[in-house]
Length: 89
Image 1 (cartoon, rainbow, N blue to C red):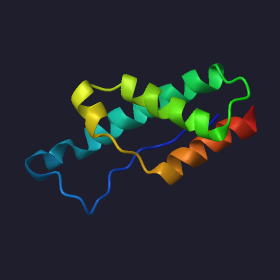
Image 2: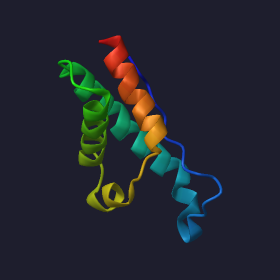
Image 3: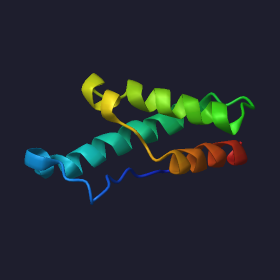
Image 4: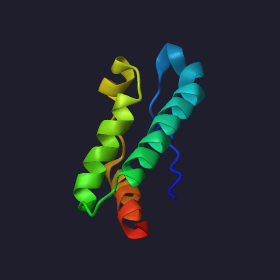
C-alpha cells in the first residue's frame, strides 16, 4: 500500500507559527494516509482522476476545517498516489 508523506515547502515561511511546521506536516500526513486507506479499501475500478478527487476530499475531511481550507497538495504528487492505488488494485 502507498504510504505518502506530506512535506511543506521549506521556502515558504509560516511566520510566527513556524514552530508548528513539523506538527502540521504530521497532521497532513496522517490525514492523507487515512484517506489512502479509505480510498484503497473502496476502490472499484475508478479512473486515476476520480481516485485523486476522492483522496483530496477524504484528506480534507480528516482535517480541521481551517487547515482543510488552506491545504493545497502538490497535484503531481497526489496524482502519483492515486495512480499507485489504481495500479496496485
